[in-house]
Length: 215
Image (tube, rainbow, N blue to C red; front, side):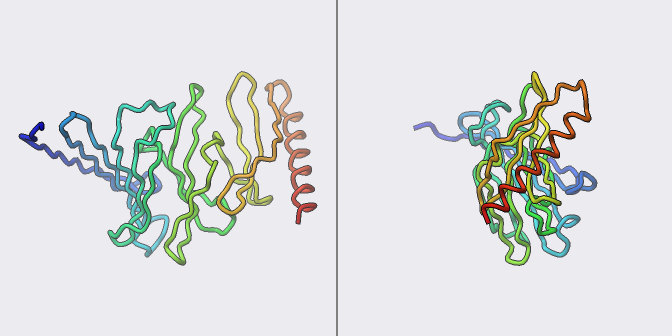
């Protein structure tokens, strides 16, 4: 049996804020028997969720996983007053890319943690809906499949704009804890912006009609 003869712990403290200003970030590198490293980022969320005592911790336990891969390499935790209330295993390529945006129309900002990045820098995220009343999170299944997501609050749906051979937009909706794909895709060849905008409006009309008919 290999005996551990020494253990090195290094802690670096950086300051940052949830809106990228004054956010607290603590990074540590711990050498274990195999020589791999643990990287930890702590995000103080007081500027987003006032008087809630929330902190997010991202602990990357495998730094060898590619940014284009989807293998779990990070432990995500939410702490309230330094006590863990939620924990999940995720893939995370860049610990310094995250966002706080409302994605379900309840006027509470939800948590987006960067998942992967494509060759054209189309970012995907893991989404957690935030319930500040009960101090709970709800992970949305399938959200990681939506590059560059954007919430359209007026319609309570999600669209995106993806850079590709032909730029394209898809349309989605959160139902419970799962993503519904409307299977509507429009392309933008950049030759006529008014044409793309009209197709976008037409797609939303179709979606609203479908939602109304399914009620």
